[in-house]
Length: 178
Image (cartoon, rainbow, N blue to C red):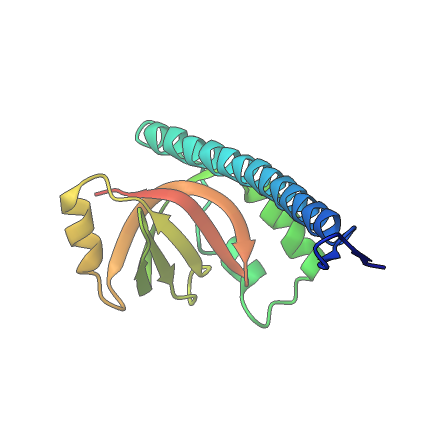
């Protein structure tokens, strides 16, 4: 309820207080939101930084890493090909057992996609297991070589098997080898 002061104007008792309270609450909620967003972003940046650091360490180690005897043909190709008699459980178990192994494979290119700091080379399945190769160029010569690849060309890489996706081995990170 409004009161009338001596000049005949209505006094607003609670209007200013309500407006001020609303502004303080909105600023408080926004501040809390910004704080949590900053913390979440910081956490994500930390995880990305750790992943990038691991990738750089793996790339540095690849030149001298001991290569496993795992090959893209034979048992691996048979296990992951479409129409295989093996079960999802058997494929999952094999995917776990090959993760982290260093391989040196020569495969046929199906597609090349450029990313900010690597190229994803998809290889065709056939006599080999299909693969996604995340190849990090070590200089301009590697970039030129990768960007010149055509479907059906052969590419030789050394890299870490990280997982299996869509029945294709993911080798990431990887480098070109001669």
